[in-house]
Amino acid sequence: MCSSPPQEVKDPLSRHVVLVDSHEFDGEMPMGSAGYVDLSRQVVSVELGHNLRFVIQAYSQSGAIARQSCLTFRTKYCNISRGICEIGDSKVEITVAWSQLIKNKMEIL
Image 1: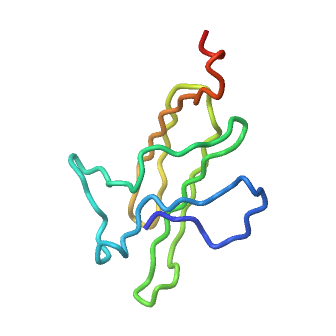
Image 2 (image 1 turned 90 degrees about the horizontal axis):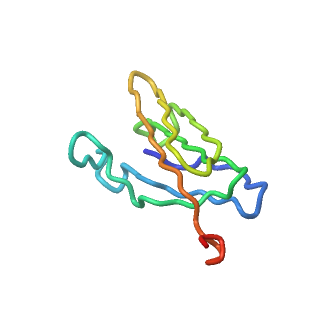
């Protein structure tokens, strides 16, 4: 399961988004083609100068968090960030493609 840990949000602009929850799929990860995990959304917004943090949690049969691993990326104007998040014997490769949102049409002229 990929989700945010239960913690207090210090920045009111921060928010947690669950990208995939294996509980919704009877404990199985929703796998797409070529071994990719299907996510609930393909785009998230992160303000420049902030971080994008991935938290992967594995649960015991009782529902308690058995293992947890985190991977944090600093925002970029453009390009790609890659990292590997290890949890137990499993590895999850995370790729983020960065691009800017235009707030003002004059910025593109």
